[in-house]
Length: 239
Image 1 (cartoon, rainbow, N blue to C red):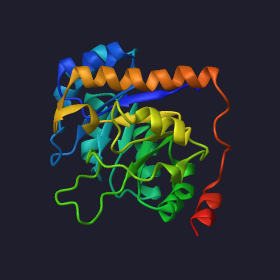
Image 2: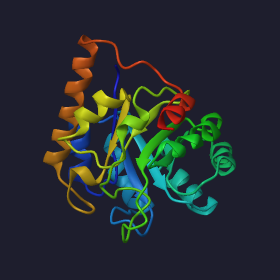
Image 3: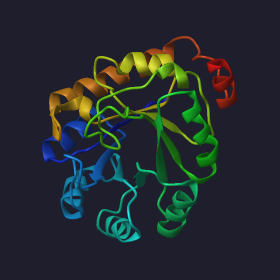
């Protein structure tokens, strides 16, 4: 099993250096003013410079305007756009076509019914990210980076056409369980490697990556992953 590891919400040179030293495959920068991880294009470009050719550079936006995406595309030149808001499949397809940059769509998951969105986005994305849907009772919830998870059994063994990643509530202590349970080939962490919101801890980044890589190595030597299931299988089992 080849595992992609993404460290998101980077705001400092030390955090970027830790992600690269650990062997992260993707590093993410957030362009959303309400987030404590928000950066401007100039800072993101400076921070991303050491990563070019070593890790994919991801720009995270939330229901962004064409003007903002255009600024990011020109100024940062990301390898991947992560859309993390209420974007429709039509809007995602428009972004992908207009800017000629691969797109990863975040889907918010709380129950089996939320998986129905997969089939709508599969044809128009290059990746899908499964993130936890914040409960209505969570005051001040952000579109992502809330440090909460969903029931990983919902996506255990799920195989869809674009590559997938798991996010939401991951940290160095639970990422191994998440990978083993789901069989997913990508993990994404933000708040789980922070001292406080927006303040990444290089030591936690290193621990997270090391924990995920141990599972990757073990999987390469161990038994086959869980049998693949379709979205329909999951929804029927859920009742």
